[in-house]
Length: 296
Image (cartoon, rainbow, N blue to C red):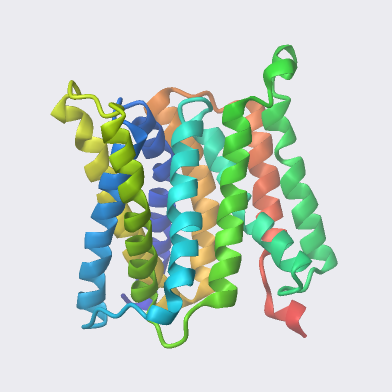
């Protein structure tokens, strides 16, 4: 990948990230039990990341000293957000989920500020406040539903960016030395796979895995794996060539794309409250973006 290809790569990464929320909604509505869906998807990612490690590093290496780190990342980066998104997706719009997950960098900065691993400037404080204010149009979009606005789907959806924020904080503080990006991705995926085995076995023994699901329903697993592989490959390629600034631009595109994918696949209205939340979140993300000027 060259610098000339970066803008196109950023655009594609943003579109793929935004598509993920609609794919999760498809997955939740597919009829495939969550445990089976998670097991197939995570194991598929394990195979993909094994291939990436062999292709880009020429080795497979999992540091024994990083077992606790991999387990924490497997839980925070895979299991919890995956099941939370599956739970929230059929209960709220895909576009709403995209907006909520877009709060991840804002919550990450808030946690980093509390733990004193990042400096909280006035600009960043404004971004944090504006990000949380952006939730209000989602919650208050219909006065007749105020009593049920904070339902389980919305609350669990709000928990997704919080879990991701904790995950990013753990990644930043405890990254094992001398490990390649793809080796860390492989390690956390291997940990998530091992953690899923007892969950899956419990589901099969309790009769939670039905036998009458059509094979055509499993297309969503292939879609999740294919776009996950593309997403991870683009992310690390852009990070290496363009740096964190270029990767961060994909976040803006993902929020916008998530709204339009929801409208295309699920006929979700692009209403004034949605656009208001989108506008506020985009400004908030710009406020919390790290700049060299703030370092001086």
